[in-house]
Each structure stands twice: as structure tokens, then as C-alpha cells.
Image (cartoon, rainbow, N blue to C red):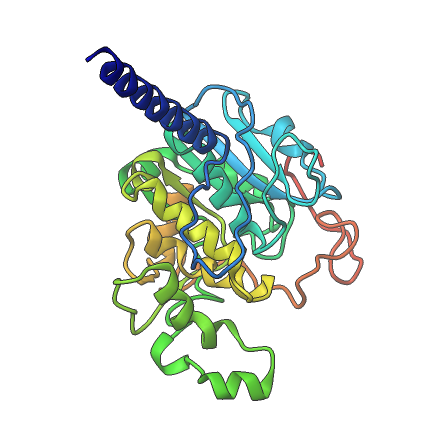
Length: 329
């Protein structure tokens, strides 16, 4: 009987070692196992970075080495955490497994690596303070963040940081109608985001009915609560991240697919186009404006080109001086 017990003990010890080793590997690689097709290459999610404890607000920023992100620290409340990812610097304190898919790679990496340790409210944002898509008369991202109404986010769970409808609303993508056949795509080369959206949506959200219409005001800057993120299990975000790592779509396409999927991922209707008046008042505290359904006077003008002129915001499009009363650059 003694030898039998000894053999059983060895089996138990071996199983325990195997379980501990598996747990150790999983803790090192939060992206393991892969949710992508077995035939596709798997790129592991990076090790979790040391980070401060969760706070009320975490601003998650997608940046490159050439971006000046000091304004986040200079002008935003010190009690807000700033998670600034540098996508093209593997030695940065916060980085991504692969510089692919534009800001979507940063957002998903942050959610996956911090799923159990998220701040109460997260704001996902681009690095440039001044950008053509920022919903502000000066295209100032700082004003966007400073005016943001946190109580409204807590009430809604998800808030897009752009109210004007131009680019994205009221019906940017009709997935079924816009889908291009494989033969058409192969013969013509580079597809549009509209043409690949249906197939991408089916891969990202299998079992979810493909919407007839998808609309949300651009451009991948939004806020979401921890509770809204947790409505999906972590494995869903791992799957989204693995899809982004594996997809053959170019950055402009894969990033844009997510641009028009975030609101659906966070349990919003496929057409998310609140009235401009309602949005500006509740999201940014700008109430009593003169508005139509899709815009309000004096809030946003689509610029002639995507690159703001040198010297902006104190220098205008015709090199004329501009009045600018915001915080110093």
C-alpha cells in the first residue's frame, strides 16, 4: 500500500506543478490563449506595466515619440491619472504589442492589461492638443477635456466626445449595402472602410446581428465607465485585440472599423447621434445655444484641410492673427 500512496502523491505533486506553471505563464502573458484563428500568427500582449492605483479618472492617450504630451500633465487635474502610451517606442513605460490599428491598439491594450484594475472613469484621447476633429471653436482638446461633464458620463456609461454630426452621422455606414464582394476587392485593390465593415463586424462580434445602419460622430475619442467596460468579459477585449493583431487590413481600415464599433461594443445603439443641442449641454455644459439637430452656432466648423496651419491657434488659415484666450501652449 505504501508504494501506491507514494505513486499517487507523485501524480498529485506533478499536477500541482503543471497547474502552477500554467498560471505563471498566463500571468506573464495576459493575451494567452489566442482568440484568433489557429492558423494565424499570434503576437503576445505585452507584460503589464507598473502603474499607480486606480483613480476616479484615467486619461488613456495614444501617442508617438514625436508627440508633445506635456499638456496633459500641465493643465489637467493632478488627481487624474494620465496613461500615455507611445506606440513606436518599445522602451516606453507604456507601449503596445504592435504599432498597428492606430489608437485602437492603445485602447484595447489598456483595457486588456488593466481589466481588473481600471479607474472608475476612462477618457480615451489622442495626443495632439490641437487637432481638426476636436469639437471646439479652436479645435482645442484641452477645452474638450476641461469642459467634460463627469456626472453625465456616470449616468450614461458611454459618451462620445464629439457632438457635431459632420463626418459620422446620421448614416455613415450601411454594412450590408456597402459590403464589397471578394472578387471586387481583389480586382480593385485598396477597399474602403465601408466595404470591409460587415465582414469585420462579423469577425469581431460573432452572433451579433449586423446593423442595417451604423453612425456615430468621428473620431475615436470617447469616455466610458469601468462598469460599462465590465459588461463584457475580458476575453472579449482579448479577442478584439487579437483580431487587430491578426487582420490583414491596413491601419487606416482596421482603425476606422473600430472607430465605428466602439459605441456598439459599449452597448449603445448602432446609430448613436444625439441632437447637437442636447449633446453640447449635457456633455460639455454649453447650454442655451442656437442649434439645429446636427450642429450649434459657433461650436465647430469643418476645416478646409486636416492639418492646422503653423502657429495655430494664434495664427489663422490666411496667416492672420487669431484671438485665443485658452491656457498657454
